[in-house]
Amino acid sequence: MDKDIVSQLNKLKSVRPDKAWKASQKEILMNQISSSATERQGKNNFFLYVREAFTHEVSFLSQPVATMAIVIFLMVGGGFFSISAASEATPGSFLYTAKLVGEKTQFVFTPSSKEKIKLQILFAERRGEEIENMAVSSEDKIISKVADSLRNEITEVQKRLAEIETKNPETAVELAKDIENRTNTLRQKLVASKQALSSQTSSAETKINEAIRSVDATGLSALNTIVRAGEKDADSEDLTKRVAAKLENTKKKISEVQDDVNKVFSAGLGRSEAGIQLYQMPQDTGKKTAEASEAIIEAEKLLKVNDYKAAMDKINESEDIINKAAENINESKNSAEEEKSTSTPAINTGQEKTEQIPEVRGAIEEAGVNAAGAEEATSTEASE
Image (cartoon, rainbow, N blue to C red; front, side, top):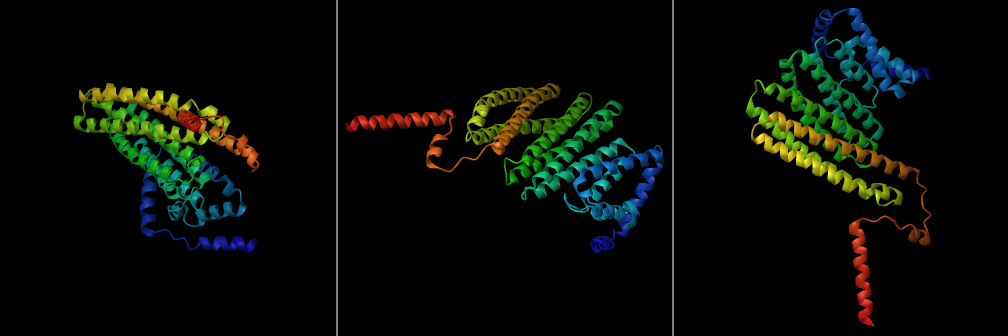
């Protein structure tokens, strides 16, 4: 046991942060600390964030060796600067907690709200990259945890932007443009990651969907900020492009929701109880997507006459409808998964196979059965 501890601690000695990086980061941190309200408050917040970061990795840090090793690593390896060695750590790895601590430390010692927002969107992008890299391996629990972290970061961005808009509208618009651009890119990355998952019914997919909705909400909030400022003074060409792009994005979301409900419905038909629960879903979702599409058509008309605010109102309306439909789909998907996990496997006999033919059929399937029966009856009469 002691040999293992010594061996692990000796490995930490080989970690050497870049000298140039240490020097530059030291200067940045010293400037930020000096401009903070009080040094004491900064320290208190730092330890709160360290505790929060450690809580995220509680299963890992519950091991005494792991806890002691990380603490010694942070102290002996050069304090704050040793965290640079963990900057490329991946979720689930030994140094990932140190990476999170580094991010929280950087956030705490950043004095301005403007710079804090930039950091939070950066951290959200990092979580997106981590999800993208793990998607193929389908490590559900780890992906789900990272997706939750991304959702928390991006939600805080939305809240902080709203606060800045009330105090400094010009700064808010500047930030909103950057946020809107980056959330569009982040959304594309998350959608691609979801499609790359090997298990399309995994809990990770549900968590990624939740993260996508949070990213969409933050991007939409940023665009609303830009449009509100645009009523006074804005580049109409840029504004038109942004609103038009959001229209197209919302159309894609409508199609995504339709595809998702079809997948969930098809998966549920194999089990009678789930089939009954899901039977109405395509019709209900169809009504919602039709309403959302109508709102988008209205938004397109309003955009043609440069009524940006009214167009955004319609886009917001459409997004609300689609988000509610998506939440219902996730709830139904979770119910179907729970039923699948708790159902008793059938005994593999010919007689029981016959008895377990699904009782719930789709309209198309029923039509096919009836047509086949009618054709067989006609053939019998002709032969007689």
